Length: 119
Image 1 (cartoon, rainbow, N blue to C red):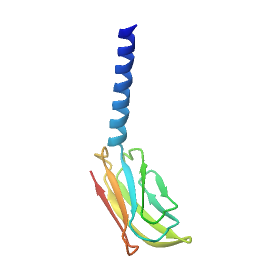
Image 2: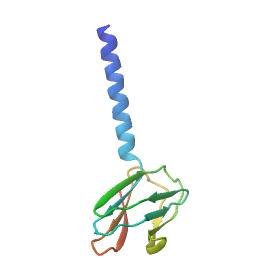
Image 3: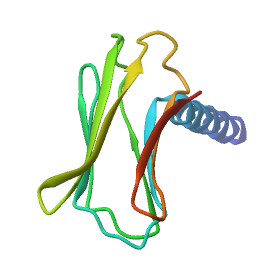
Image 4: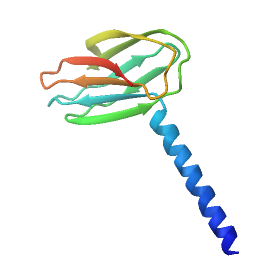
């Protein structure tokens, strides 16, 4: 009985460690709003999927994990307030090496939007 409980605990610990590693390595998008402004949403168009952050509150941070795209292309993004685009842009997206990739979107204190990729 004691060996069964130890085996079960070990199995659960390995399962938890695997899930934590998968979450840590999965591609994600992070939006940080350092401004005092509230925005309706940030729409991010990936090569094969779409992400929507919103509503975006002042001095907040949001994370979205997404599936690997496995396709190169562009990341197009658009920040909206009152159904109007207030900022937009694009980044190149390489479909290789997606594990651990982070797309960072930052709204500065003046309301301007910047974007970058990190690994």
